[in-house]
Amino acid sequence: MRLIMTLVLSAGLAAAAGAAEKAPAAKTRQAPAAGVKYGKGVGAVDTVKISELFAKMDKYEGKRVRVEGPVVAVCPKRGCWMRLGSDKQFQDLLFKVQDGQIVLPMSAQGKYAVAEGIVRKVTLTLEQTVAHLKHEAEERGEPFDEKAVKEPLTFVKLEGLGAVIREKK
Amino acid sequence: MKRNNIPWQRVNNILHRDLGYLACALTVLYAISGVAVNHAGDWNPSYSIRVEKVSVGPLAGPDLDSLERQVVSKLGLDRRQVKGRHHPAPGVFILFLPEGGEVRLDLRTGQGEWKRVKRRSVLFESNVLHLNHLKGVWTYVADIFSVVLLVVALTGLFVLKGPTGITGRGKWLAGAGTLLPLAFIVYYYLARV
Image (cartoon, rainbow over all chains, first blue to last red):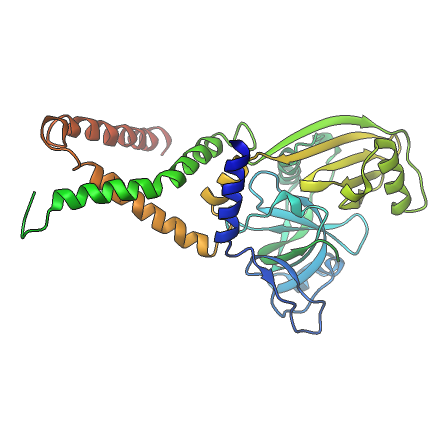
């Protein structure tokens, strides 16, 4: 019975699919944005390296950019954020949308994403840093040690507009 | 009721019956999903996530490919299941598995966690539709369904006549069904604002 219900629902899903459509390869000088589209997908804006966003936060603050990288984490609860691995080691970029605006599936983790959004520079106090890191750890179901946080965080994040996710780079 | 030769009562009942049939499956699905997501604070309504401790011994290697091979071998994983890997911080290695699963290890000790993620069958699909993960065309289908439910609710008030209809016991039950949410709204404003 469960199998039949699952099959019927899955068929209904496939028939009703709207936004999760295959995006054609973009005819730009950049790498084609083929894959499954989320939100507005990605346009023809220039691709910026994630490391450059971190290195030149003030320059990119408020600007619409396109980035790409492996998906190294996805929100397990509401699919409202993902982290893209940077070209620089030990660095990743938060791509965040409002709850429900885009819902990223957990299966996106380990895949490759091209994402577009507005760059926001975030400067936290030490207290806010602890709360921020604690919240992220809770969302991922991981332990968190408050005492390990010694310095406040300043980072950039992408206010997500759209993304295209595919299996490989 | 019959005005201008339009059998309103009959039209009302036909609408209620036929739209009720039409809306049945999706109403059941939304109800199941509704209960599930209503308790999202206590569980993950779409995924079953199980975490177990693992220990593979200290890991060392010239590169991430080597680390990946060691972890796959020591945990007896199917290589085809590996979606990717990540080195988020010095001493931390993550192997990505299907559906958001992962093995996260401390390179120095080889200890860590294996997170297995599985979609909850039926619930996952129900939530996709109920919470409109799809967007696009489904948004409009859901809007139409809402209108259908509204018509079913309103026509239901007038299906029966007499002591069991809206002028009889119906008014008390409809009134109670209206007062209950109103009471909680009043509580919300009194207790929280």
